[in-house]
Image (cartoon, rainbow, N blue to C red; front, side, top):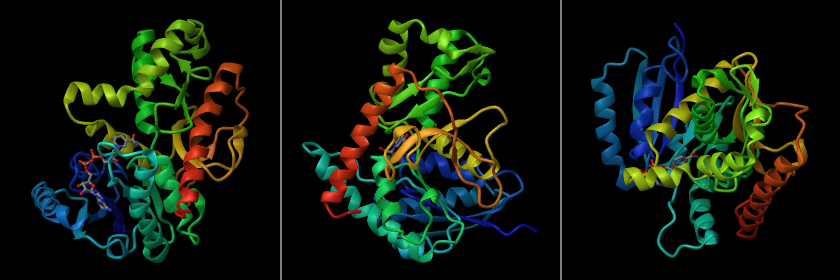
Length: 331
Ligand code: NAI
């Protein structure tokens, strides 16, 4: 029998947590042959609600669920973690400046990075979902000096999936026939969804991109501002689609990306494509899957002038955020 994989989920009592945990426990994240042990990390006020979610998980009688425990101490919550999903974060409150937001989240992601460094499994893979995701991931990674930097990632898969769906609708093709889209930069309004290298049902994405009015006034802003549109319509932020993207991200990291395709993830930049080293930026990536799998940047894409400008603008925002958290002593 296979040993269960320890999966730690922070913010387990939140709305993404509620959409995420059942899918992990049912085997959709790590595959149908891998038992999982869930470790839920909450703040003390969230523990009771997490217990309720754990009761419902029990009541699903998932054959792959080997156990659940609940903690409010990161040192206990990340003990032995093979996969860590960092969902809980501090949302921007009324009147909060960006520096306040970064500082408040530093108070969460610095100790969590330290705890991962101290107690997680040697093969730990970390996905940061909680916003500002890229910079929170940078803070966690920077405070885990013994864990290789490529084990820390930030989620831009929801943006990637949103872009796939927009392109499929525009081209009138099934979403499964859209491949090789890329989200570059920050998971924020400055992100750049890149259609130029895509394969859209056998036709190059650059054909669709020739309609610059659609590209720049419709496609790019629709993807970048989708989160706000969901809040407008639903009265609450994206939760099921965010959970779905987290499942997709870890699934493809651990089990590999499909042949001939790639995906997008925020990773520790190695300087590829002119993105400064040591910021967490989204890139086109593949994973070969298996033990020790890493996200590898897709090499040798030609970046045109329009794309270059957009990538540089989003990367500049990430550099500013890095400088801000450096100034706060968080990294
Ligand atoms: P939520 O407010 O419903 O839940 C957050 C949960 O985190 C709460 O239960 C809270 O008690 C918990 N929490 C807060 N601090 C914690 C800590 N230090 N340790 C453990 N748990 C803690 O929020 P929701 O809707 O589940 O969203 C979570 C985060 O995901 C937000 O930051 C949101 O902005 C972000 N998000 C990111 C997306 C992405 O594409 N990267 C997409 C959608 C949301």
